[in-house]
Amino acid sequence: MRLQCQAESRWICHIMGMILLVAGWPVAMAQTLDINFSDDTAQFRYITPVRFENRFGGTELELGFLSTTTDDVMGIAGFQAIDEAGSGSPGLKVGVGVKGFAGTINSNDVYAVTLGAEGRFAPPALNRFGIYGSVHFAPDVVTFGDTERLVYINVRLEYEILSQATAYLGYRKIRADLTGGEDVSIDNGAHIGLQFLF
Image (cartoon, rainbow, N blue to C red; front, side, top):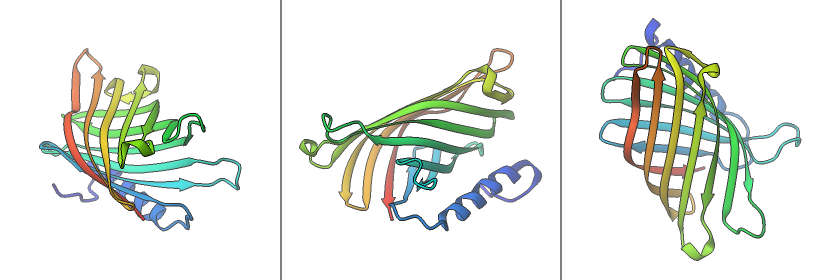
């Protein structure tokens, strides 16, 4: 698949430009590069903590894209607040936020702004293992183009290989309901991935 700034793929070039721009921000906390593959999909994500003059803590910005073997590409951008659940639940982090999706899938324009939540449970007793899950949903009022509804579900089992690298096995489902009653499955299956902290 060739990513060129032609009319039909100009938006993905804008997303890549934003990723490169954000990667150059001065950030004191660890940033994350996430790469995962399945037989039919490849996803790349860049996640960085952001600060707003110390008014908010534990906020993250996510930029990335997902491509398929049928040359469909979907850009993803998100913003969320995430933090430890509390001293009574060591190793549990929860977050809530907004995630936007934009792409052309099977010649259909898919655009959605979702609300969702995520959680990661990695207590010391699990010895480097962790469990992660997230769900996001967009009803008709915040979907555009040919989209009436979008659901994003992601779960995975993680293992910390090094302090800067985590491997995982996951399952992801992205489904869009289109105008006219048709459903399109953007992704539905298992994948393997690596996360790098730097």
